Length: 313
Image (cartoon, rainbow, N blue to C red; front, side, top):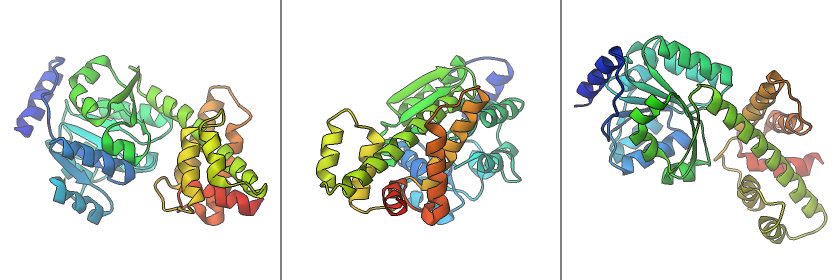
């Protein structure tokens, strides 16, 4: 059934036709870490047929207990999958997943769609979309935000840039993944730009939250009560509350590795520079994450900024 759906899509694509895809259809997740794994669990819970592939094969196989099929390579996972959702960390990993020796491009057929969920530079997104398009493959520029818990319950923010016809064709999948979808534009790369804008602000907010909580600690204030006040006052930010609650509990098990905001703030500042803009805070936040990672916190949750700032001060 799935194979016939893909072949029908390919024929319609060759004829330049647009048709929506009946759901649920076969989906492949390449990368089932914190976010990819949560999205996979969410789709499986709704009865979607899902294939998974991850460098950590044990992690991929763990989803078989919930009905997924674990496969060894991205190329295998892409066969007969109507949609391939890429949830790896960065552009080099995405390059390998898509165009490596065992990448998606080895088996994907015209009419299938690739959703690019990593936070990467807009020019990388544009390049991947162009190269996939040359093979007749649709691309949805689709970074997400909100953390694993929101990905698991379908309430994460999902930013999309793709042609309207592609959005309509694969709308059932988008709706199944999230109830908080933002249509950015029809141009690949614009969702990536939006995600960098968001993540730079997240990084700035997190550095600020960690700084003022260290300040409160040095003043002898009760940290929990201080955060209670902030959460109901003008200093509130979601990431500040989320991460500083963990910091107060000294819980630095990685839900969001320090290296992710290190990468994202670096990419965001570079994108701003390419646009001819240099603000006063972005580069400072970038440097804080880079320094904390270099100091050995790269494997910890980014809430560990609180501990690092407290020691470095």
